Each structure stands twice: as C-alpha cells, then as structure tokens.
Length: 337
Image (tube, one colour):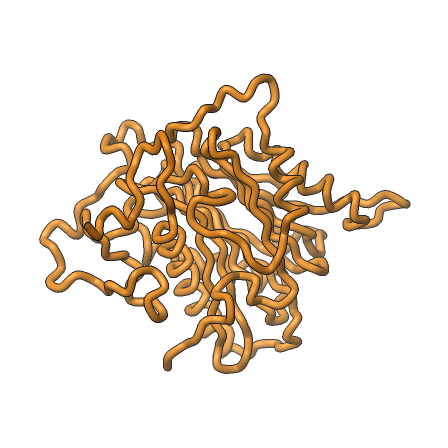
C-alpha cells in the first residue's frame, strides 16, 4: 500500500509540534529544538557506543516523569549539552514547565553529536555558545524550518559527504501521522559506494531526495565499509541523533518501543550504523492529538513506517546540504556532475 507525506513533509505535520533552528556559520555548528504545544509523552533508545545526552534516564518507563516540554538536538559534542539550558530558560520565561511548589521546571532532554573537527572556528572563548543558540532556536520555533546545513545539522559530516538536518512525515491509512527529525553525522556512508544513490532509496516518496532509486546493477564494492576520515583509528566523534513523533496516543512504554523500532531507519539508510564511534540515539514523542489508540496490528504498522520515515529524513538531510567556505567534504549534489 502506497503512503503519502503530510503537507509539509516535515515532523511538524504532527499536530502540535514546532521546530526552531539556530546556527553559527563561522563555528560550523548549531542547535535544533522541537517544542510541543502541550507536554508530551516521550521515550528514548540509544544504540550507538558513544552517546552524549541529558535527562534521558527520566524517560525510562519505570521512572515517574510523565511528559516533556521540549527536545534538543545539538552539535558541539559535550559542550552542546548547554543548549538544553538555553531552551529551558526560554520555556521558563514563557511559564512552561512542571510546577513544583510555585516553581516552574521545564523538562528538556537533549542529545549531542560531534562536529568539532569540520573546518569551523571553535575558538569561542571561555564559554561555548550553545546555551544562547538553544534559547534562540526555542524562540524561533515554528511549523516551517530549514533542512540540510541548518540547526544541529550545520556542521554534520558523513563518510565522504556533508551531513545535515533532515525531516520527513508519513500519514498512515487510519489517519495517524508520523514525523521524523534528525541530525545525520554518521561515521558510515549514506550512499551506495561513491555514487549519488541513497541507501534509503526503497523508502523514498516521490523524488524527495533525488528520485534516483538504487543503482542497477549494484556496484561490486557496494558492501565496502567507508569510514568518515578513511582510517578506523579516527572512528570516534560522530553520531546520528533524531526524533520520531506521532499524534497517536501512546504510553511511556509504547514510546520507548517506538524509539527502538525507529532505529531500523538508521540501519536502512547508513552503512554501517550503531558503531562504537557513533552515539546513535532516537527520541520518541507522542502528542496524542489524534485521540487514536492503536491496536496491535496498527502498532506494528506504526513501527515499520517510523523506521521508513526516519530513513527518508536522513537522506533528505544529506540531499539538502549546501556548500560553505572551509568545508572538509563536498555536498551530495556534487556527485551528480
């Protein structure tokens, strides 16, 4: 059965979600913040060997946290965790957060990727700029936002190409919407061999990332492992971080399972993924805005489509990357020439 995208083909096709970006071109890094209009149920799954995150333990189903107020994706490696403090400040000023005896505490889980070695100027002085970028991104959150070299994808790299910020959406036959948002910065490759053909091609809807399909015949070196900097001893410092969202009604345990299933999208679009040099992480978020509670068969479909939507979002992020001065790697469009 063919599936359709939402009207924007962005995660904001899930009702009640807004996304904001902030970036610094000199730094070649940035921040992306997803803000739900109302507190939302969330879960998380980490499958990479080198993660960096904040407030993820609170999302586990056995812990008491009921909902979150924003999710942050940031560049900057561990320095980028400051971005969540900026987002938290913006939300607190707006009166958003858990009320605890007269105090408001916004809950803002975050994940970071490593983009410190990408040609950008990281001489930022005493304090890194991510807190301010997190604040700016939160205030700018809206229904439309830039992809590619934007937000948390500004300084992202893949094996041989610039990475980027990607998003996609899918509307299921029952009316439930699924959306993905991802900053793709993997150690591995998103294309077959050194071609322009994306590994995610079987899931493409229309020509959203070039419409090239898979190569035919497949090149003999298709299964060759290609590392970002060409040497395995430089395998640290990568990571693909993403969010899968739906307007279905989910429990925290179901959100956790959705995050697990969505990692299939990384596996189908990046070769290899989930390495010891990647901190691959997926947040799952459920707004419940549709009011639809899924039965077992519908949940299986949701899990499958979530993985496909994430794969498409990853390819779209690389497809939309734009060149900039000082880049270490070319953009995807350079392979068309």
